[in-house]
Image (cartoon, rainbow, N blue to C red):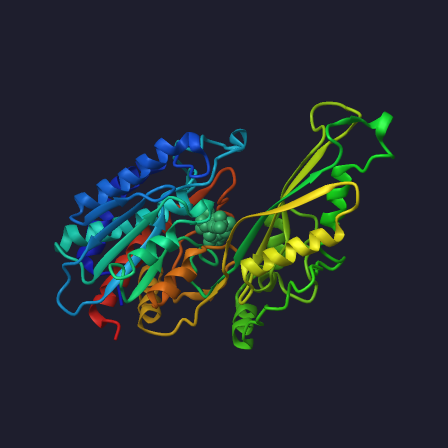
Length: 461
Ligand code: BES
Ligand code: ZN
């Protein structure tokens, strides 16, 4: 298969304009985690809404208890044509620390073929690749080969709490033959990828309270339990020296990956020493019996995401802090369950907490892990479409990150989910200087158009 000439020509003509349009989308600081950006998040939803309306979709911006869901539908495909649901998110992570950006987070800039901006790759650029593909097909052909439903949500970066209820509520209307998501990365430049797994998540805040207030560390230190030290002791019990998680029962539900999937991972061209250099660490860690890719894609974690206690300003201050706090999250693998991990974490902390402090563990949000079987016409079509756009067959890869709603789509709608992302390793998602490869944006929209063509031609049954 190749990209149809009429589409290819129009993509080539529109490319510069499409990038300009994406810049406008990226300039909206739709940071879902921060209430001060609520109006911007609303504006990003309106931007997506307007774009689909212009394309001739029927669009609704549906309120939720949090940020709205934009639901766009195009149902004029020939009778008997299948229906596909495209999911993406218009919200972004906070841009802080701002001083570490080479160019401002919400002023998109291209340097060296990389489009720098918060949300460029996660996920506005990838969502917009779908918009650009559908729009170009409609422009050239006046129609799409399949019926398309688009869900653009504004809460992915804060846990998608309101999306599963939304899908459940609109289950009938969202009935489709498959879900297509571009919110992940390719294995390497030039190597298109289809994801076969995602890790899940259980996110906690641990608060430790010691004395009623901060104390002079000379007058009281040694006689009063220090909450910062207590927290350090609690955290230190979570792993053994080899990186194994020591929370009772933590691994009980871990289902080993099938040997052929592991064999596939071991065949991928991955250089662990390069990976070490890329992350800039002096050496790598984790359970020694697993390769880096196995650690990232098939093993659960327990990590500190943030720590706070005592005096952290300039110079020295002799103080015994009254409180300490840690954000701790566990990445989960099939069949671990966030609710069960929550219970295990709470029991573990209660068991190891030293006397003299009060410790609370709060579960902030979670998501189930996911594994696909990658069988069927949706995946066959994706293989052809990616090969047509990128000039080589895709690899099947795993992923260490989480997209909680993927499992919900599969469970509620009862259809396969295709994860076909266009990010790249080192793209700095969630970090300063996030970027998306301009080439991947361009090839990505071609692959998406080819996918719908293929799905329209072959049907799915
Ligand atoms: N796009 C990412 C998921 C992802 C991360 C895919 C890395 C491929 C590689 C998504 O936007 C994300 O960041 N998800 C959060 C989910 C969490 C807030 C529940 C994550 O993984 O931390
Ligand atoms: Zn993200």
